[in-house]
Length: 163
Image (cartoon, rainbow, N blue to C red):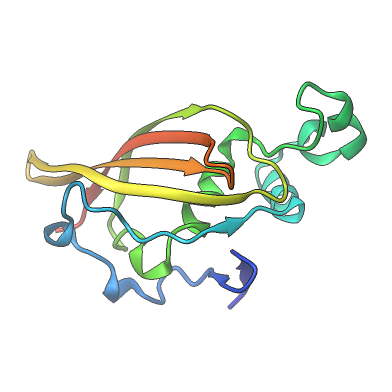
């Protein structure tokens, strides 16, 4: 199975089913309890691969000369890179239980851009869980930081979990 680099020494597992049986079910989730996370060293290669995957061609993300002349003075990552970071900063045994978890919505705020070379950390927790119309909901809170402790982005979302 292919792997991408998630830190200097820890590979990012891409076999999403490998640890499925170890993942928490709804009954195991404790609101307020911090989730396990991993630091992730963001590389220009990871940014370029993400951009290629989503069809992003903005030179601020891909062209060093253009980015240096731009408003950020250098290369940055697209704001939606948090999607890659969510998986890269989460150990495979702590991903959402699959199959069956459904994204029920999310809202993100972007503070500063992530940059190549940043070491990204994630603070994540469930804020609440509840049952509505016989469905199991979890409300999540996620905040990404760079190595200086600056907030890159933060988001809240809900998932519907399998029974």
